Amino acid sequence: MRILKDLGKAFFVGTLVFIILGLIQYANGFVFSDGREILIAFLYNQLYSVVLYLVNAYYFGFLLKKFPNQVFKTKNLMKGLLGGSLVTLISLFAIRAFTEVIIDKRFFSEFIVTEKIQYYYISFIISVVVTTIFYAVYFYRNKQERKVTEQKIIAGTASAKFDALKNQLDPHFLFNSLNVLTSLIEENPEAATRFTTSLSKVYRYVLEQKNKELVTLEEEMKFAELYMSLLAVRFEDSIVFTKPSKLENPQAKVVPLSLQLLLENAVKHNQLMPSKKLYITISEENGNLVVTNTSQPKQVLRESTGVGLKNIRDRYALLTKRPVIINENRKEFSIAIPILGENLQIVNTSDIFISEKKYKLAKKQVEKLKGFYIHLSLYILFFPVFIYLNYISNTGFPWALFPIVGWGIGVSGHAAETFNYNPFLGKDWEERKIRELMDKDE
Image (cartoon, rainbow, N blue to C red; front, side, top):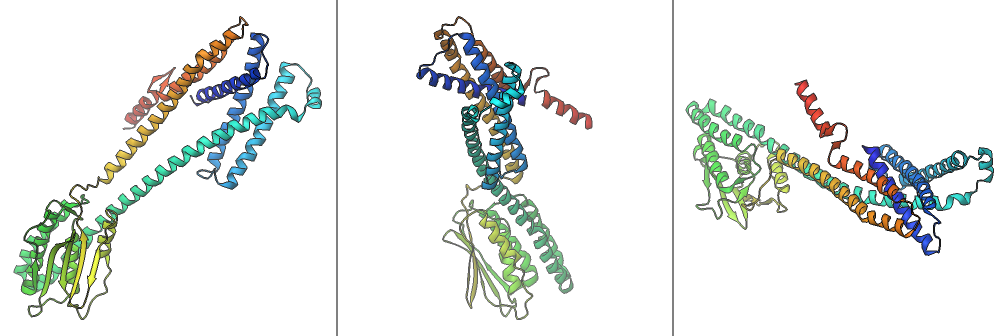
């Protein structure tokens, strides 16, 4: 199918070149004597066009394989241009040798002796112009596709990073909770039982939010209350927790478990005693959810890994340009996380992947359809042109049939490839065969 499509393109390019050169010659007063002369000129033109087009097209394909994604770098481009020029000159020599020796039946030695560089000028210039246009079109398409690919890579990396950051929370949360439970079992077995019940409710929430990128502010606030009740089992009256009596927008969005991490950090880094209570307050300020605690650092403090806070910063950085704000003084420590709009939604990563695959396939098919319809439109446009030129030539020979039929074969091959039709095996044969082999393997 590819060879048919390439032949169709080559025939099309050759026909355009023939028409343009014919019009130039006609404007300069040159007129073909009869239909036979036009036909011979057309066939010679197509011989040059098809051979040169195919040679340069396959040479360009070779460059794409040898220098993937680097063809248009200056060094590789120069190699391509020099190599293309050499291939073109060799092809021109071969074509001339074929026409002079095989068709005109001259001796090869005579051909070599009489051959001059001037015979190559026009064909070489035309070939260079057509090849340059081909390179320019490919460069533009490649540049546009590269931009789309880069954006998809960025989006895919962000999604993957988001999932990785989100999945850090499960072991992080469970590890710290089990440490609390271990300490509590030794100190107060009855409280440990209540703690275990509360922990099961808390962890159920963690599991429920596992596949969510955002949750409502109302859900997160209820979870914060549940989590603080869990901490109260161990620390009893050493913590004073205050939350807003009413949320401004309960359906606004926040990153799930962000409050848990902030509350956990407040407890982990500060002293908690009945005589020195830790005051923790959650409030809404300027579109942020602010967690504030009194600053009473532990005298002996394990070195912090910073995983929790870094996690929150990184996750919000993937969702909004608004920063996570930290304010600290001798009396208080506060962290403000952005409250996101209630209409903000993040599609599941698997949905993004499937959607992108569908979009890529659909875009590819649309490009194929567009290319075919342009090709077909040009063919239909030039159909009457050939007939008119045949008519005004007054030769009485229907030479227009040759370009019409030849180009028509190329259009047919292009249509077969576009609509996935094999003239010998039927429509969608390849897809049906793949399914058949897959079913067989199963």
